[in-house]
Image (cartoon, rainbow, N blue to C red; front, side, top):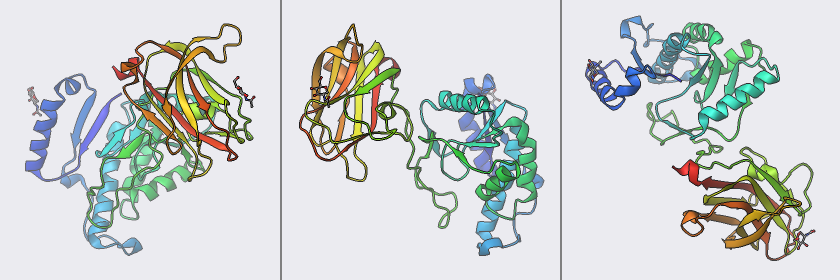
Length: 344
Ligand SMILES: *[C@@H]1O[C@H](CO)[C@@H](O)[C@H](O)[C@H]1NC(C)=O
Ligand SMILES: *[C@@H]1O[C@H](CO)[C@@H](O)[C@H](O)[C@H]1NC(C)=O
């Protein structure tokens, strides 16, 4: 992976200060070619003032968005030869911990489906988390330059995708990139939106089987609560003693747990507890021999950190036990854990 940073400012003092800062902070990355910093001098830019005022945008807004298109055009043009794929980011986003693995997995899936995609989206925000094949980059760079004063980059991006004959967006959830703050490089009109589907990826659920004896509604299977993504478990009125049990493939030291139930205040688990278990049952392998309770759900939610300080031994099961029956159905949105290996 190579990170290419375009220094897009024209202020010479600022540029040299920033270069010095990057040079001292990322000396080894620069040396190994994992980080490349580029700058394009202003004389190479097309006119940025006195442009068309499409969409009745104010002149300074037109200048801002037009320059941004040209910035991206240069960045994309430069990056075309560097790798197989190109991911567009901004400088004020943070990423999920597992972003590289997740992106690789989704590319493989797409390629296996033989889909002719032009752009995969790993964030719902503007021009963030968009992935291209490097072979498309020379065209994209020229496209952005050609239409630079017509409209903002995220609209051009959509036109480009459609011209490349990908009709629908391919957006993956959870999102892998999120804006850090609400600071805007263009004050006033340019909002820094938050991606509601971002998951930081601090949770690293291991491989596991998930079982429940709560009657499942349609295809909202128990394992969907365990796997990353939009899916969830949806069950009919659970009774006392009913459970949802995750059986880990390998014994794992659990350090943190988050379980969220319900949707829009409905179908919460009213009375339940979360337990860790050891020793997978030898015959049916769908549960463990013994369990310890970690605590009860509060308002449909269970969250606990530092679990390894209480239970330092490895666990093989995580069980949600219903402690009182309820008429309402139950939605388990997500079960996420952190484990010892991933925390180090
Ligand atoms: C970066 O730092 C190295 C020394 O660590 C120095 O040799 C080099 O000239 C610096 N480069 C820039 C562009 O400042
Ligand atoms: C689910 O399993 C538990 C424990 O074996 C049992 O007490 C409960 O009655 C079962 N519920 C259903 C709906 O089968």
